[in-house]
Image (tube, rainbow, N blue to C red; front, side, top):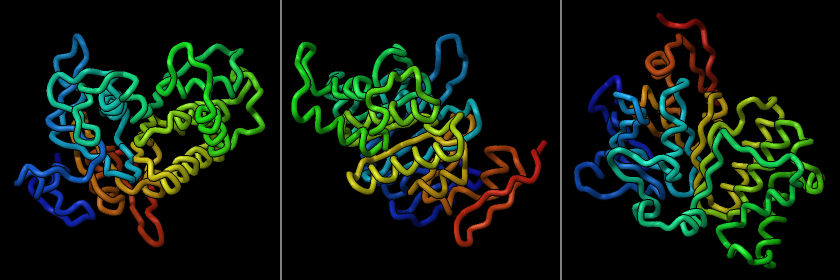
Length: 292
């Protein structure tokens, strides 16, 4: 969906129409280079008359960070859950590296894609290191002891998340920001090619928000992991993401590089705010007032 139906622009992905789908791909049936993409996707929940998500095509480009933005209730989290196979779509398909995710068995899928939702709980007496080891479950049999490769993956995840000094602490004794880094370390220990994070910075102070996003960027830079994450802070989305997907009431409004998507028009249409957007030297959004 777009305020200017049929408009096109040039991006690194090729010409892109107002519905966010590659014009060439739509015309020829060819895929873009999205490691993860959805097609003709409609998702609803029991008892609802309307779809929560209804999109023709969304790509998470291979080796890039893609931020999903939109107001509360716009369908961002539902989209991530659907990609992660936690929610079954009414129609349409989700593809991972060209294969329908419905064709994967659970462990094989978990070796390829890691997902951290907003809701995560564990017994408070579990240590940080034990929780991070739980991220190795796709690589082990039920009764298998941790292997050397498991230990190396856990050490790397703990180091990358910067939680070395917390490894022996009980998770229940940690602050909110520390817990979030531990959960991220657990997902990193899966060593997947794709990482989905649903609002990883929500309720964190600025220091821990930046720490989480720096971990994500480092993982992307060093390992080439494809990342899709939901962010509420539009400035952070512009700063840390290579691509931005703007979702409005379950529909795709626009997608592309931040400078193409984060505009005053998009903020008015999608978020209902009058805002100024500056781009020199970086994108910065200054909200002025809500629109009626």
